[in-house]
Amino acid sequence: MSDFCRTYRWSAFTSWQVPAEHTSGVFCAAACSCNGLPIRAGRLKAAIRLEQEQSFELSDRYARTRPDPRSAKVAAFQVRGRFLTALALRIDSASADAEFYAQLDEQLGKGRQLFMGAPIVLDLANAPDFADHSRMRDLVEKLRARDLQVFGVQNAPAIDARQLQTLGLITLAPGREAPVPRDTNPAPAVAQTVTQAPLAENKVIRTPVRSGQIVVAEHGDLTIVGSVASGAELVAAGNIHVYGNLRGRAIAGCHGNENTHIFCQSLNAELVAIAGVYQTSETIEDTARERNTHIYLKDEKICMEVIA
Amino acid sequence: MTTELKDKPPLGRVIVVTSGKGGVGKTTSSAAISAALAKQGFRTVVVDFDVGLRNLDMIMGCERRVVFDFINVIQGDAKLKQALIKDKRLETLSILPTSQTRDKDALTKEGVEQILNELKTEFDYIVCDSPAGIERGAQLAMYYADEAVVVTNPEVSSVRDSDRVLGLLNSQTKRAETADAEPIKAQVLITRYDQSRVDIGEMMTVEDVLEILAVPLLGVIPESKAILRASNVGTPVVLDGPSAAAQAYEDAVTRLTGTELEMRIVEERRPGLFRRMFGRAT
Image 1 (cartoon, rainbow over the protein chains, first blue to last red):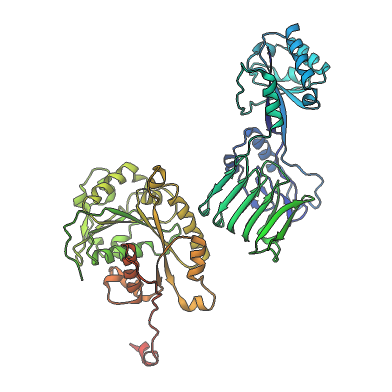
Image 2: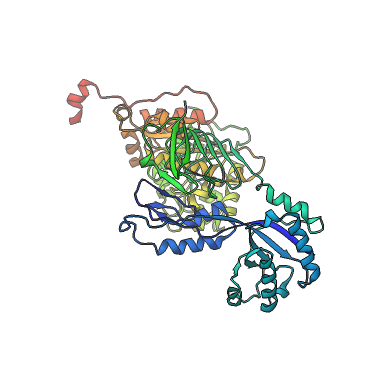
């Protein structure tokens, strides 16, 4: 039985950039303290509940060893959060025999464009025997011969990471996945999970958001009917709408979607961020202050437009 | 004055007086509110939750009568009846003092609940004087509350802290955790309000404060020398002769008991010309 596939998301490296100037920069969900913004990684980690906590530890480490921002004149590079969708190939047969490859080829024949260029992770949860190096090498070679871009292995605690490296593979911490029923016909399931984006879960809050509260819409838009106090925080994967005074922080597109927007009836925000690009209260133009404002990203810059 | 005992079963309402920020007048307000409630004939007890920083008994003028305290009762060293101090001025008013030698860790959720339940069987209003901050002491003071009086000074840091506390009242209390319970009825009490400083823009206006906090206004207490004087002699300000602050507290308490009363900002009487010329010498 060859079986597939779940969409599988992981963040590779999430960290900060060295801001070239103090006016705007990249605001990262996981960044520690960029540009004088004390944002504790731990708190946002809890708030955003990303699956791969590893990436945060990584970013923590980067953040600690960053050069002194005062001495950094021009940013030579930017490290930004990135989410990558990978296909997980869960192997359910005990050995990679002719039957296995026949089923695989049949699957590839059905939807080759699905696999074109897609990074693939081998999931060995049901096939621990593949942890053996020679079998793994054989499997990877045959998969790569079929233009499948295998780059990692998950759910294989017994595997030797160093030997994997010789095959150009890395081990991945298991991601949180929605289980796919095994007995159903795998083909439509594949089509479904890949063509449909993860279902948006919008959130509507009808009470004022108080100082110290964090409201997170992890998979969709966030709408607040009421005001958002200074010291409160809104985080959304999608857009943020505030029908009231926005005095706290608003972070839209927290998973990196640059096509997200923030709307508020009166802009007094401490900070607004879209897909990691942020602007603080100091640099909000007076024309938009306390006005009905639409905030969006254009050419990696925050734009504020007064509506009505 | 209506201090006759009512024969009705006790209301058993738990009111927490809280603020987040320190020094805004929680203890003064707790003393004044409980005294004003008692004055209106309600059987009232005021409980000091500020373990380790015992102040309420001084404001109430009973610090020399403290034998057992809140913590003794929680730990079973004394009975509640032994720890309650009856006020000498108002027979409907009692004080449950706290310990000066222990700290907030001596408070337990179960202990607090048990004592409040016992008090509910005897009193109409149980006023809980919360410590400053949002840690254990303050959390336990608000946890079992039915109503909250959020004391705020008209300045930004106090308002922001009050906002934080309002958030906690909506999330970290028994009523918030119980599925179909009515949420805590929170009202804001603005203290140390100085109209002359508001007029010259040095102080936030009542409207500004309410716009941020978005909860009903219970009252506005003017900055008043009467409050300091009353504290120094150990008398709740409402029992210490007529003053603008006392009037404002009485109005606030009337609203607290559910009576509609038009909001007025009582001002400290400006000294007249005669007093300004000769009053200083006296």
